[in-house]
Length: 202
Image (cartoon, rainbow, N blue to C red; front, side, top):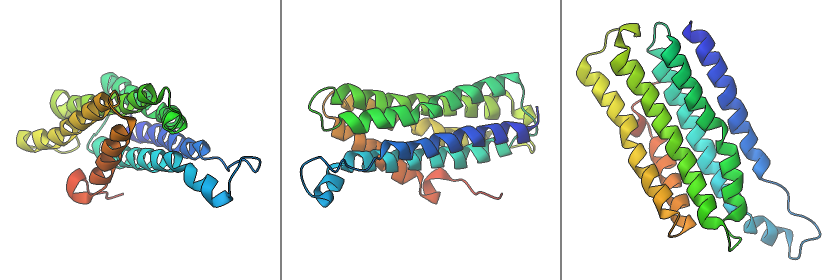
């Protein structure tokens, strides 16, 4: 299959997922006690989760563009692994809403944080699996030959992102705020050009 169709479909799914995130942020009820400023500030978990998830999906989009851009064509295995990646991305808005809703409820917040971190972990594993398939198992489908050392370096960047998500998910059992801190820090880190190592050329 042409990589243009693969990218177009993937871009559509990513665009919908990143747009759905804003639906988690709703105006405070006028009937609720307190001033509007107080009620807006009380919704900080929704803002924090939104920024973290938005940044993460944005980074996925950038890196996905670079990953698929290396391909001359895509075979069935690559298409199926790409669908698996999109499946994990599509559930991020739900996990974000769940986490933001329960973070300050006093019950259920640990499980909600575990699900939030777990969804990001699943996404990182799916992305790395697809990256490995392209760079190591189907290197013959690349547009231009890449030395093995370069392919390993690119793959290592993907693998290194899995460990912090494991930590973020595990820490949910201790405190959900640790999950938020780790996932937010990871999003901020990978937003830096030096961390992603990706140059977007169009």
